[in-house]
Length: 326
Image (cartoon, rainbow, N blue to C red; front, side, top):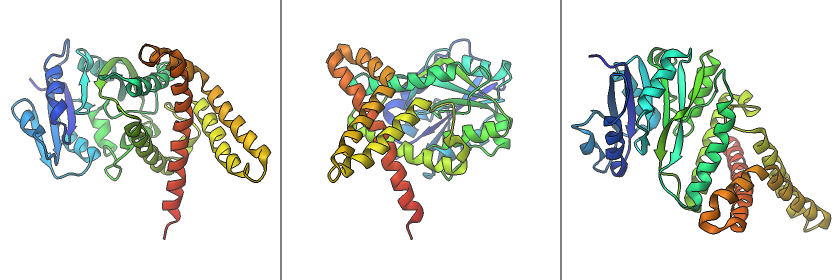
């Protein structure tokens, strides 16, 4: 029987997790006939050997996740393409619910959700921010303009007609695809009940480094879609206000060395940013309370609001330096 759905997984040095992902796919419930295609993107560990007898394995020299996904899509036989990352373990109804959303609701794209596969202060913080973004997306009945590659899907014909993921991007290729997809008049459904479990960043260093890389990627995509700087389904308006307050504070605080009132203004702007992010600060304290206590959780939430904006600011400054560099 020909598969209705093709699940495409890019693989790069994920030997530690790909086995669990394939296990979960083998235990899917109520799923239509589906195939699993794993595209090894030049791994140097034993991941491909774990795949060989359990799914269709395609091998290529390292070209990035966008190229790997496109390669798998080119070999797919299903009418629907589902993309899953090699470190994301799908829930038992993931294939069924993602395919159902594509097949029956007038959408040509779908975006699933992430849950934390690990625990700790940083994983809880990452998950809380993700859930904060999901709340507004869940209210978008006519669809969203954003996808996250670890769990997404498309009508295969539409995906191929649009040329697939942008292979020139190594970061935010999923964001670019979501924008391009909806700009072409297609709709993306947010599927809240199709989670995959992801190993979130576990240390502050890893968290900040990941935030920075993603910010650089988003800025590259904004250069292609400047209208999305104003609004997209992923970025809440409150975050933009927080960023503006922190950016102004960074300007005011050094000036305070010469003009003391400017330092007070800078501190006031930081406080304003934290107050603008107060729902997230409070939610962070509640989520972290069992690990570090409510008061320290409040501190973590406030620090997150400030650090997030600072990382975006550094990424923007770096992007401008690159742009004007000879």
